[in-house]
Image (cartoon, rainbow, N blue to C red; front, side, top):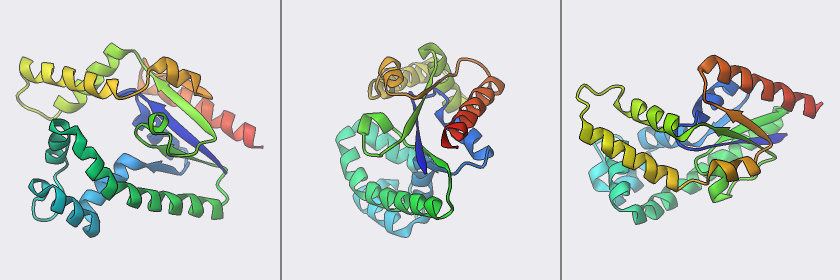
Length: 209
């Protein structure tokens, strides 16, 4: 069973590619989605996060927006959070791999933030999703403000700065391409992205025969 890793800068379309693979009946390990689930459903994790970040606890779940704001103001706190979250993620990830080995899956896809930057997860192939920086910035801002009623210039400037901060934590697209076995340029629409992902899906299956 091959492990296919997705790597892409912020708002490059990595999650969309993961969704397309799921539509193709490929098993996808989505670390972000898992963390969201842990914050709302896993009582052990909720208690530990609430103990270390009491202002994030709303009585039942962890408020991710408040937690994100705390980390943004004090990045060193990310280490405290990682010590709580990462062991659980690794445990669930190992179960994910074992289940798919038993099912004799030909390959699985892993969608994990900073996959190449952290170098903590083994992969057999890497798909790099790249897009123009200005387009990624526009996508990021649109994603954040889509549900907001009041959008002002100060908020837009704040989001631009946050985009740059997040981008600078990631490797460049040039380095991403050097590590990639497949490259998806996602400067077009969803139909174009689906076709490119389907082409890679077929290529992986062909290689596995």
